[in-house]
Amino acid sequence: MPAPKAGADRRQEVKATAATVGGNASAVLWQGQGLPFYLLSPRPTPPRQEMNVGKEASGRTIRSQEGVRSWIDECIALAEDARACEARAPSVSEWSVANHLEHLLKADRWIIGWIESVVAGRSQPGGEPSEPGDDASDPSADEHGRPSAVGYLVLSTGFIPRGRGRAPERSHPSGLTTPEILAGFRQVRAQVEALEPRLGEVDAAAITLDHPMLGQFTPAHWLRFADVHHVHHDKIVRDILAAVDD
Image (cartoon, rainbow, N blue to C red; front, side, top):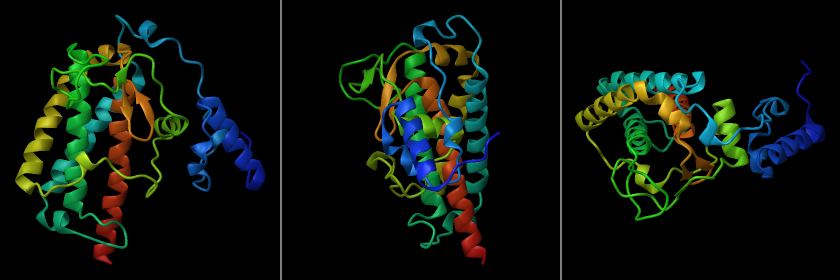
């Protein structure tokens, strides 16, 4: 395997990959992160309507569901540690550990709720705005969207660059108590568990919903993103706890 290139040559590699995956050179966000971009050009994807219909779920979607469930278990364990929840390190993040947990809970509720609504046939393109899980459809959902170039990179690498984007306002912490966070994660865990026998349907679903920065995601993409999102915040939480212990 050839070694990653550096300097001007590597920047050209990044831009070429961005053009391949979506024509968006904003993939240079990853420059300097040590990722081999020339390995990330996605293979052509057949129409979603023809994928996994009546078949078992793909290995990636199974791993995403298992990953989210495992990360939620980690969040529950962390939320049960009062000292850890109170930890704060402004040099790492303006949010405390409890704030990160609340943010993850809100994101998980939103993502898993929307996936449930798709599998149940309640989410369709057009209509009035709604929270995922409601019966109303979402106007940002459509049947033909794709992730942006950066979106493809996030899903492919499992890596979100730190400090390069801002979470949607609705997912910001608003002061939930630790018992509320615990109860919320236990409920979402049950929802994630209940998706297991329907992961084939998650894979087959063609409808997409807009991510504010990463393009249009299918339910399978969103499930993968939930896993990646947990990885991102777990690293931040670990850095906060390490800073407090130092």
